[in-house]
Length: 161
Ligand code: CTP
Ligand code: MG
Image: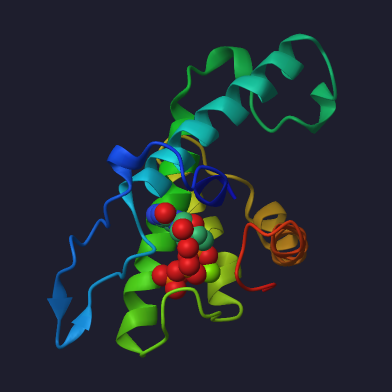
């Protein structure tokens, strides 16, 4: 959600990652994938990690933690944020190849791109249990649709899915 929330701010970073370049007559990524959105995801990943670490150290819902947060610096949060953003960008690359306009929906791929990217990136420092990862897929799918509906309703997003 973070790229949507920073729209209209930090305009110096609002340039498209592909700089308008084309591949086989089509944009590589399109105007909707900006450095601003990518950085927003990385910063948000780090902030959420710090929040979870704070909760862990304050013994709030510690039984839900998969890792010992005190033993980790920011790295897993940065990797989750960067992985989400890169997963989303890779998805847009394929979306342009199959001729879907920026902003139009591509069900399932749009819902899982960030999850797959975050999973691979964070695996560099911590491999989440496989069963838990598979079990979280429907939660991620439904959570993403729910956040899109709320974002659409609040006027942040163009499509509800
Ligand atoms: N966004 C951004 N930079 C990114 C990712 C997202 O600026 N790296 C912003 C764009 O304003 C984008 C919005 O967040 O329109 C919603 O992101 P997303 O749904 O991932 O992009 P789409 O608009 O659907 O574009 P695409 O078809 O390329 O996925
Ligand atoms: Mg979209």
